[in-house]
Image (tube, rainbow, N blue to C red):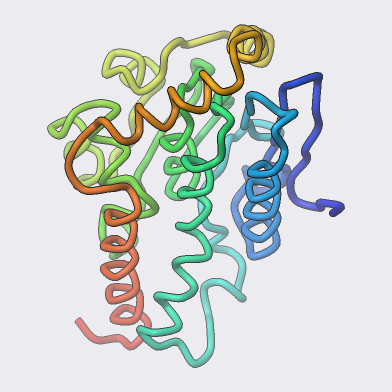
Length: 251
């Protein structure tokens, strides 16, 4: 499949996915949503690719859902049922990121907002440029503050209190604060970001492929509590209800 809003290339056993709508900070429209789902699903059967890197083209990682796209923001015939079904088309790619066998390095080159923040969360580890910023913008738009796995992923990365701090306020988290809380593992100058991500990926690619896969699975399953899938389904329900309420004009 040829992609128009993302790029996928391989360098030996390492696959690099680049979100590629730099003119709008890689905001996600329907095409990018579907292409991102496709490239991730293809990795289930691509065992020659041992590690993935996800990054963004231009100055941003991803500004989240493309709120300037009228097709997204002014849907016709929206109901709680259609809202829920549409929500899953987005949230499922977070599940794909956790279910595919390849560990994922996020090379966060700029702003990661909303769905872009959730994509960053779903990476196994993250490197960030100094100007990278993270925001769970959902709460600022009138939706639930937990979306696309954030209520499961973020507390496990930075603790419940820190996660609540950002999901309930919609405030930005700086790269330095992300490093302090453990959300990113290093802050790297922009010109060295991909080199550092590649070095980390190559280190892992030199390990046992089965060992990598089993370790990723163990890390997901041994954190306790509700499963990621259960958490996402709960979030999907909540978001569908709040979206339908906003569109209907009811308070």
